[in-house]
Length: 113
Length: 113
Image 1 (cartoon, chains in turn green, orange):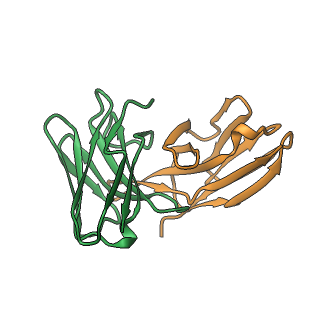
Image 2 (cartoon, each protein chain N blue to C red):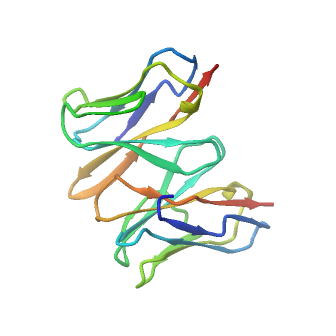
């Protein structure tokens, strides 16, 4: 158990809908990262927040947005969902702003039908 | 272009054999990470390599880093079925004061009894 929690574990929704994925980092970690992993694909970095501020942006679609709240939990919002958005979405956290040693949550499996 | 290349991308091997996974990266870095992912599961940090010549070992896995060659290896000794997983390397790169973590595509390892 990494100490990072994600909810929900599974999510099934229809095209065009909007969903929110939630992540709570490990206690004491200030950075939160979001990743997308499609079936049998590698990891796509979406976005990083550090202590409430956006720190780095990857290949995040305009339909997707995220934020980190004062209690350091983070939410990833996905809107106007398409079939191709079906994937595992991981949240990871780390203590510092710049480190590759990240602790991953269990993931949210999103299925868009 | 910043690249992290792993090879092979797929490896099927017999129990008891030795093998090496390679991770090459295209620009200067002295921080490299190895992660393991079981099918449908989250990622788990295996090794953190923070300097040239760093070597870390855990059980049948040994990782090393050669920053001059921009190469890391993950060596598997006397493989056992439980090591079947996908292995990712990731590299910290700082460019123009901007930090990026670049991920390899992953090596899917299947170990047959």
